[in-house]
Length: 241
Ligand SMILES: Cc1cc2nc3c(=O)[nH]c(=O)nc-3n(C[C@H](O)[C@H](O)[C@H](O)COP(=O)(O)O)c2cc1C
Image (cartoon, rainbow, N blue to C red; front, side, top):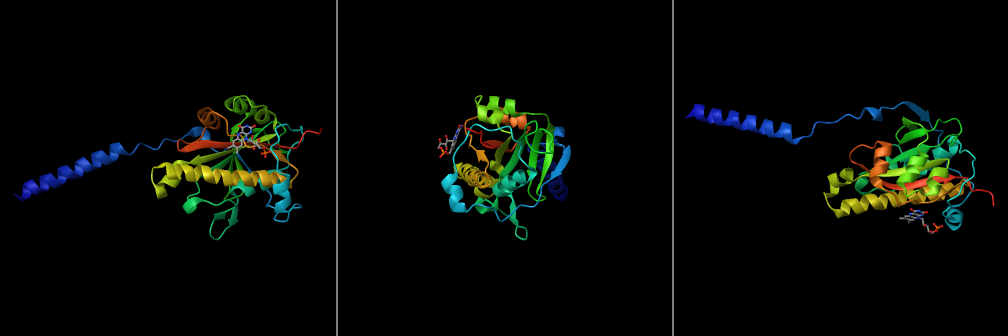
């Protein structure tokens, strides 16, 4: 009798181990996600020259840009405004997040001479260290524009900021449902408006681009499986009239 019980326990254990092993997909490493180099960003400046009211009043979507490069300071301010850590002790960010699930990631597509002293390529914003991680080399703006129905603003701006979101991170707290998806999109809106206002305060201009093929952008940026493209913001200086 006891031997029968023992056999059943061993078989049940083996079956559970089998199910567990085959139900968890093996973690796939993505070799191209390796960080090529790191660009340290200057500390964000908390005393700008424009009031928040003036920035709201002056904000406008602009789709044509001059050739002037952005400075590393400009990039620092833009990244910080969208997803910077504003409270290191509690890890709070510049934009609100549903249940602090923090599903958003920022990528910077840098064109040739787009940013002073920074090579063209695709960078991920590491907000913990306030730095850019170079993930891919080369000027990818034309390809990004192609993914956005050929919108010229994307190809001609010195840089494009791409906001991605991981629905899974928010779903881990709120469930696999439309509410979680809505939360992620709402958060991208918060981050996006911060980009608009910070750009305006620094005499830069931008436009929110929501019309693009999210899968081709995902492939171009070589995003992890759980990240989806939500928003694109070309940023530059206004073209003189
Ligand atoms: C969700 C969303 C998606 C948008 N997508 C695009 C876009 O793909 N291309 C574009 O040129 N403008 C896009 N815009 C910008 C709007 O055209 C712009 O906000 C509108 O013309 C009002 O102008 P304003 O932003 O200067 O007030 C988008 C705006 C929002 C809110």
